[in-house]
Image 1 (cartoon, helix red, strand yellow):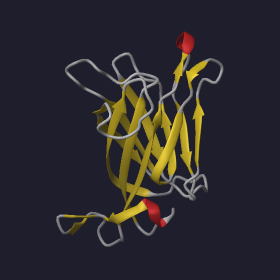
Image 2 (image 1 turned 90 degrees about the horizontal axis):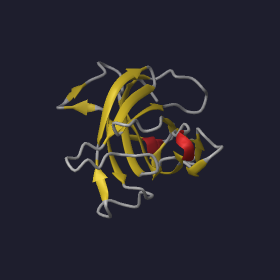
Image 3 (image 1 turned 45 degrees about the horizontal axis):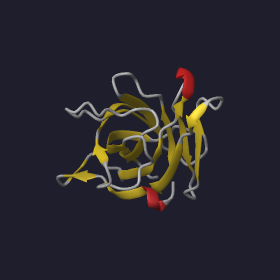
Amino acid sequence: MVDAGISTQAAIGGFELAAGSKPRMLGISVYGRLAAASGGHTEGGSIYVDHNGVVTANTNDTSTPTTALSASCAFGAGSITLAGVTPAGQLAGSWVIGNGDSKDDLDIFMAHGDFSAANAAAYVQAGTGALPGTLNVTSINGGTVSFILSCPHEDSDDIANGDGFFINLFAYARGGI
C-alpha cells in the first residue's frame, strides 16, 4: 500500500482503537459512471486501482452495455466490486484492500464512507446536480469491507444503472501496513 492511501493514524477521542499496535486509516476515493445494459442484462462491474494509481474498470455484461462502467481515482488503492442497482434503488459493493499480492491479510476493525450520485451522467463535482447518498458498511472480514449505497430522497430520485457516482471509503486496520 502506498503512502497516499494511508491518511492518518486511527485514534478516536485520544484512545487507540487497536490496543498497542499502530492503527492506520486507509482510504480510496473513486468517481465515474455505473454500467447500464440494454435488455435487462447484468450491470455492475469491478474497479481495480493499483499501487501506482492506475485504474482498470471492468463491466460485468460486455455483450450489450449501453454505458460501460467507468472510473477515476482521486487517491488510494484496492479493488471495488459493484453489483447492479436493485429495483429499490440500492447498490451493493465490496472493497478489498491490499497491495496486489492477492492476499486478504489485513485486520480491519472499523470502516465508514460517503457517497453521492449524478442522475444519468458521469460524476463531475459536487454542486452540479449531484445528490448526496448514504454508504452503509454491512460487514468487515479481514481486509474486505462490504457496503450498500443508496440515495434515499423524498422526491424518489434513487440511484439507477447508468448514473454517475462518487465513493469515498475509509478503513482502520491494526498493525504495520
